[in-house]
Figure (cartoon, rainbow, N blue to C red):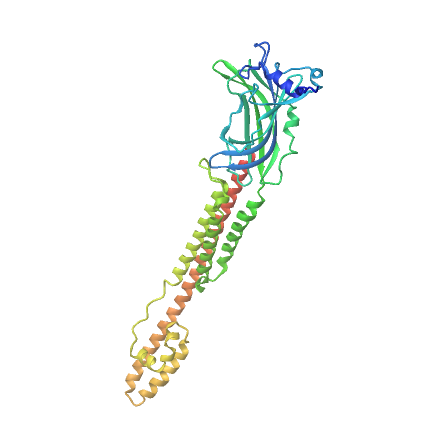
Length: 425
């Protein structure tokens, strides 16, 4: 007669049932309640995902480790097939209420439902966390800025007499541990110094461990896409003063520079961080560059206006001018523009007019010749005054150019001074 034997429970199953049979996850796991539970904390920075200057938030990916001793989760490995370590559900045992004080939003962290427990009662809670924390971001020196963001771990309810905190590794080792950091992004991890301190609230001391995440931005992308094009625009604008002001191309050229600078500035608006506390120095740089371009254009407009200020409307023609218009209508436009030489005008006028009035009264011819001489003297005087006015306008243009260079020099020196003050602070 065959008899079926009941399958024997596995040692792992028996151990788990034994440990959790009378376990109360709401009670701190100590035999003596006056003894504090020490939570060892370790932190490894994996990457910096986002730095939001407007909302003053930083998103980081970290590997977080908690280690503590649970006096109720102890067994003899020889009684359970040599099992020295098992995994238990984190919801079934006591877990410390350690939080991050700067925590402001729930990140996309994976849920790890288990912890490791060894036979001596040591519990290891390892998990990756995506931390969205508040940070005082100093964007004044963007894109050459350095940031110091803190991650402060503390127990939410338990005082230092109940739950104490300590570092799992030495401070120097944690500070210089950058081997796991993804170092090919925008930010470079400098160090992670840490220290332990206590916070007194309502006559109770709370243990805290603060990690300072020191990061530095890599500025090459912003230098190539923002600063260098802006400097090129300013250099081209300065050289455009060498264009002749009376040619009409200077204003067109300067307008094109201003338009191109505006287009680049608008397209790269999202590259510059927005902050409501302090305007970044690069924002002041772009605003002043725009103002200088507008000032340069206004100076050129002023000089061109001066050049055309002395031009008068065409005077009413005398009888001699009417005869000239009759015989030389083909060149009237050139004459009005002062392109027809005055000597040629004089010779042709005398020739045709002498033929027409050859048989006329000699006194009349004499009067016309005198009138013509007075007219030519007036034209010569106007031509000399016009050349003097053009020369004066060119001197004004040179003066405005020197003023523009002086303003730009003061602007550059001010930027360097502000940069020096920030670097030495």
